[in-house]
Image 1 (cartoon, each protein chain N blue to C red):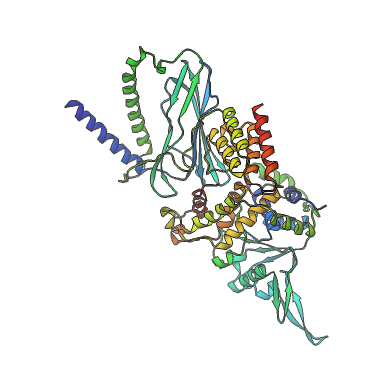
Image 2 (cartoon, rainbow over the protein chains, first blue to last red):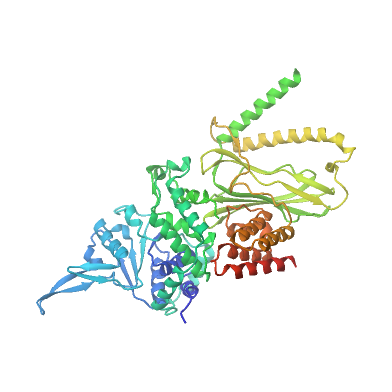
Length: 311
Length: 289
């Protein structure tokens, strides 16, 4: 009898105060077999949330702090010469884990980002002559700090596309901050452990794939992505390029995962609309005017979503 | 001749006011705009509430410029406005406490909001639905007796004058930036922007929805039944269930259960659909009972 994904979400909620959208995104990423980009200022429990996910799943957790001098081998691993054996041996990098926190991913140069993003896509890493499969599940949670842009290397759109969704974190409410003081003001709080197993995650993924999506909803998903490619004349000045077909696939995959999380065997229009923003917001290319006129890009994506009537 | 000059002056004044108002129009993406009352049959001298709900896509700190309609013989006791962030959207609610001093039917025209539609960049007038209330008690002076018909032209003139004053006040309130030349286009009710007025009480709608579903127990029948119920609470077809259950007309838990059952019947897989339609019919029967 496998644990339900709701139990995992509840366990994360017992460790982290508030941040419901982030916690749900972590669980959905596990169900939908995808990776999450987390954007928010420091100190919002991003690391703790990732650690809590790994602990609740009884999986491995590793963290890489991305810096400008990081090398690809620091991420994926390398081959070293073993003098005692007089042969090369492979040392696997921190990417070989179940939950990987790539902290401040935009602080490392492009070749390091590429090394990680290739691993995310291929689910395997080639070091020297050997190819090593990554553990299953393998979830990358990458963070970006929107406040300090100096000395960063922006992720190209093609690489952002590898992330199933992007979650924007905000500060907790006053009430939540009081609860944070009560929960974490004293001794250290250990994350809840062993709520579900890695085998359970495999069961959830199979279950989510079987969730029914009506033809009208598939049309709705296609229309939503098309709306980013042919925005209204007003928004067209701000949107250079719409989302890719990978976004279409991602919306449906996440909508199925959301339905599964809510113990339904069918997708509802609400599931699609709820997941559309986190799937689309990092896949749309905006023009310079968005920055110049200090427009929140999310408002443009929301306008595209709102322009499409739900079935 | 004097009348023509006065008419032309009024027209010029209105055009000038429209231009000034447009200059300061906020840029909004209005998802829905509904006008409802917390009772469809208020009693004479019993205070009740009129509720304006506006749902905006994106975050808006404060919404100004919502113009209330003439409330006929209703006396306004108080007016309260709230703007709340609801996830990625903004919910604006204005609750107007009123009391009716006369019985009979009261037809209230739509409220409106002038704004630049963020979706296409055009200035538009977003209208709510209109509202008809039946106040229990003796017939109202506006209900139309033979003697009262003489008063109608006078009341019409007064209402017109009040409308001009209200427009002038609204324009002065909005005047913050230099005037622009674009003309405000009165937007007809269309798409997901303007809600459809609640046309019948939910009990009647439930009966019609049941008839639809029982007559056509398929996905299409379920969609048609769902549409009937949604319209009865002022929602459009382009909305989602989450939007619908937030409406004042859908706060009844029993009605929500019916809406959820119909949602399942409309979107579940073919194997589960007969059971889902059976459950939806039972939910409809349960609500009627």
